[in-house]
Picture 1 (cartoon, rainbow, N blue to C red):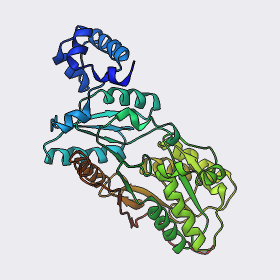
Picture 2: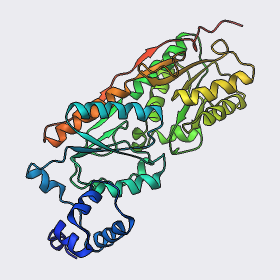
Picture 3: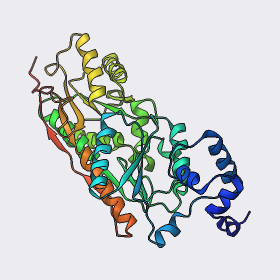
Picture 4: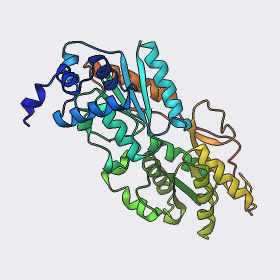
Length: 356
């Protein structure tokens, strides 16, 4: 079937071939629930004809639905719920509705959602990927749909990205601990799908261009920079790989203590991991902050981990800026990447190391 033949199909043709009304097709393309038997008929015709709504043509005609899409890894995780809150509020201020889908940290579910959204009649999409950088579905899945990537950097060329200055965050956290006399600092790098298993492998992975798509890798670069400025050699044994859970925080603490390496400070990627890590450290008789001081990455104004020293993230603003950027893309305005600033907020989990 030629490209020209594919373009000849209209939504009326799909309705006739599937025996489904245009109203039901519209609900399907907008991601709304329809009868399973009807969905199966539509999918069969779409597969046979390779038909997709011609979004680009709709925009040339100035037709819009007032609906934008949001794909994120896990809505129940505080990071993504805060970003989503900013997206919802900014969308509402601009008269837009948001169709949100969470893939629960699963690459398989993410692929299925992307396939469904590629058929949806949306004005644009904000996409926070979960998949491995080299395995993220092709941008072609979205055809000509206006798109913004949030919480990642350098994922797709010529697409605006909204993210935090991760390298600055890693640098500030490490320099702060060094200034407190803590020279043996562990770095727990967290991933939804880890690209490697050991600290030594992660240091090598930093040379891969795809590594910049992971916030933990950018933060690790800042950690390395701060150590280098203090003439401290990076110890791969103090770089631990984890996922995003309290249990992985416990495992990270166990790994750090099991290395038989001196450790006086730890940098953690979020408060959930920090909760598990500190619990495990204390169970081994260690005092926080005297024996080991901790700095985490956490959201601005969040109360869940208020006692931790932290690199403060602007998650709600990330959501707001993502909607603003998407509106500019939809309106064919020039849009550039947005790197949100981070700040250090000291608290109860850090103190100056006393001579023993």
